[in-house]
Length: 302
Image 1: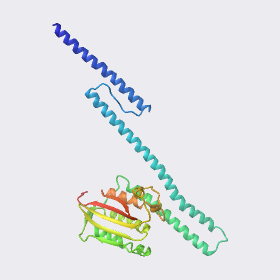
Image 2 (image 1 turned 120 degrees about the vertical axis):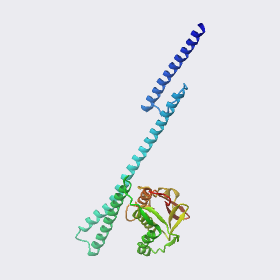
Image 3 (image 1 turned 90 degrees about the vertical axis):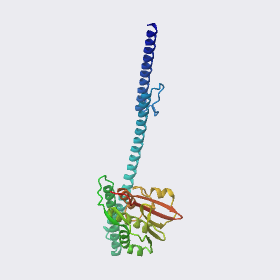
Image 4 (image 1 turned 30 degrees about the horizontal axis):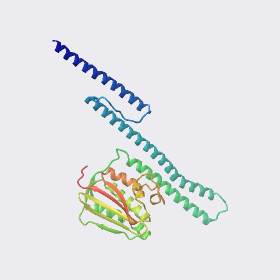
């Protein structure tokens, strides 16, 4: 009987001790979380009393802290990108608008010649055209990036579609004194995707190649494993790897993608369309040769 009482007392003492230690650990955890929530510390939860269930709870709380930190970092990055976007949009719109207003004011003068008026009107038209393209590009990109952007999935003969698209650039190639080298796989390549989206991607990449090529343009279509790959290469002046990595950023501002007419949104539009088609697009530069690569997975079904 005495032994039973001793055993019961030992058991009761053990349970009571565990309860007190666990309660103390809960208070410590609550205090640590309060310090974290009040931004007094950035440390994650630590425990001194090792209980399997409490350890698991602590682990999940720390995971949640990591997710919160990640969300805050992404939010800050988005806010900074938005500020940068507003700055770039303002600049892109202000430039042609300033030109238009300046030349209109110049035309109001009675002392300018007919030839000067004609040149001023032509400049106004060009600036208005740039502004129109700019606004259309911004609108198109905002529409494409919507979650419910519709794709009309159909059987697309990629070889034919790309050749048709290239024929449309005959005059542009000629005007820029470019003789494109075109290499197409003889085997017919078929994708189940949106033909207009594919055509838009090709047009944007070809326009970019024509616009910034310093000498030549090469277009190649081939089958790579289970994917159809399109490569469009053009010679460029010195260009860093960092510039290449940023080319598809919708608000990256660099001479390679931002000069001339339009807002330089052709590459971001192409990237968004490729993502909608579950494809991929990337760029690389080697020995002053810039190459844009698009890949569509042949085995992918919609």
